[in-house]
Image (cartoon, rainbow over all chains, first blue to last red):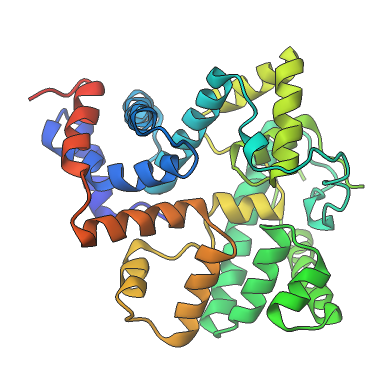
Length: 205
Length: 132
């Protein structure tokens, strides 16, 4: 998502020292940031502190903020980092409340999509370029499927790549065969690989 | 098993793209390995997007299937077509997108008049150095 024109205007006004623009941004995003943090931290006072720290962090990072970045996503990222800080301050594993076990086998069935698309990927710059390429290319593919109303495909792939569900669980949930689920995954990966191979996607190749 | 290096794991951790068991494993390592903490701090100081290249991470970081706030408003008002409504419900209740959950929660509070955004906003403004 790109930044909205209204947010872009507010950012520029804030950079020019406009206090009212700052208040507008805070009022606009405060509620959703509170909801985001409150889903993970029970204590309301702590939630308010973390959201305030998020806005302070945003203010401090304003010189580095790139105007083509979606502002909501940027703020949520800062809030995520503040949450990590908080859990470390609390000196506990936040997922202790969520995970029923710390089985060492939980990640053994990582899907193949976690592999690097390019086997030549090493440098930070290269990784960032690939990350941006993936977001852009995958975004185009998803846009195409949604445009055709192919929500079943989008659901299936979102469960595969975002939730890391096993094929059999996806098949049961969506009322598809496991073969069909595997087929959609294969098609998506093949298409991404073809696009990567057919373009100079990454610097240095 | 597909192996990721530490930076890739930490990238997924920062993007909240790991399941609870993997998160627990990372946090356990962070408590025991100072070097891993240093990598995490370096990645967090970088204002550019975390360097990562898994499909799932790109999907989450790009919020590629997150509906807009306007769409969520229409969803809550029952103004979307059935296919889109079903998809939004799936994204909220099955994918459990934390960003969209936060947006929906905020929209519900504002619609019910229970939002205390104005008061909190003033305190945040003061905390960031903006005073009346």
